[in-house]
Length: 213
Image (tube, rainbow, N blue to C red; front, top):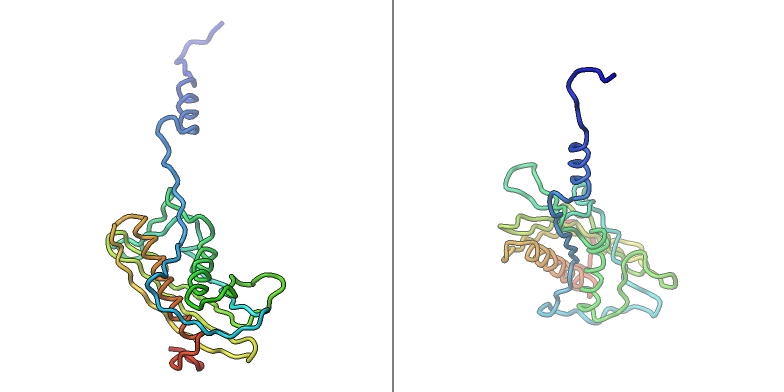
């Protein structure tokens, strides 16, 4: 005999949960992937770097702060201590790898050599110069600018000493006010950084000494 009382059906609840889980109640956002491009067409060139056939310039490692160690692109807001990490606009690979790859391409063009590789380099080469990067800031506000602050060190492994250590600071305007403009500004900041490092590698007198400014 059926007991009297309120009846309770779980059917609608199950259906609702199922719809939520499968995304049927709302179309999920399309994920867009971004990479850092090489933009060195108008940059100066520094040919004449002397390397043997087995020697290379190694770019890396690149050390990121914790807030940048994720796939989503980080947007700084106007409020202090707050940032936004996008779920649908993401880097196409680990950010430190993209930065090393972009710098490698930029340096290769500016130095007019194919002997620049991302650290640690291929198996049968010898690292003559190594560029290590400590990233302090690499993000921006879509409505304002992209900020890049990196302390980079250049070491000459043959001579066993520090050639240069500098703090690079760049603020690039984000002209379009969107993610495309954000990544374009980020790419340009690495072009400017590559120019500074190329000058050091090419023997610019202002860099050819141990410096820490």
